[in-house]
Length: 232
Image (tube, rainbow, N blue to C red; front, top):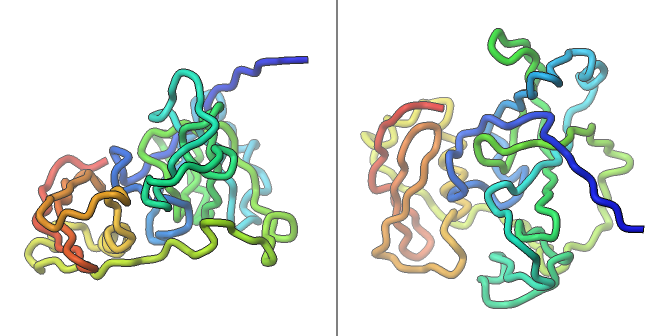
């Protein structure tokens, strides 16, 4: 019997990324990245979080709301393979899916009371752009969710830092000190599309209210300029 289900967000994330470019390709790659999980007004009941303080990590179940398409394709081109090979959509974490749902394991850094948003979650290592709708939050259970013997298929090698980041001190000083390590790690992961390798091209993305522009030659990323703007 076929059934359809309607869902609505319980929260949205407030992160440093105003667009998709630059967002880490998986959660946990940049632990220095901090974000807030802000609940929708009808879910701002502290009782809903009772007991969560005992967990170090949580699962965020969220929506690829910037990648919704009509219809679906049984195969996709994973960026991990340079965008040249097609694999089955259910063998990848591509955002282009029959149902655009994602999940991320993040560190629970704190549960805080705010005047504007009520009780919020402070998390680290999230891979969501600002405003992303979150459908559910579940505690991470080490005995059930961690599988040391698991095999990772074509993505078994960790997607760690690949680039050395160079930036003049006078440019780097435009970044607030508490955000510098997060930005450095984001850049070192190589935020460019996998199929682009033009050393003359200047790329740019918004991070924490700043416009960051850079180029890559070989294994060195050079920050060309950082333009100040309004914060998040």
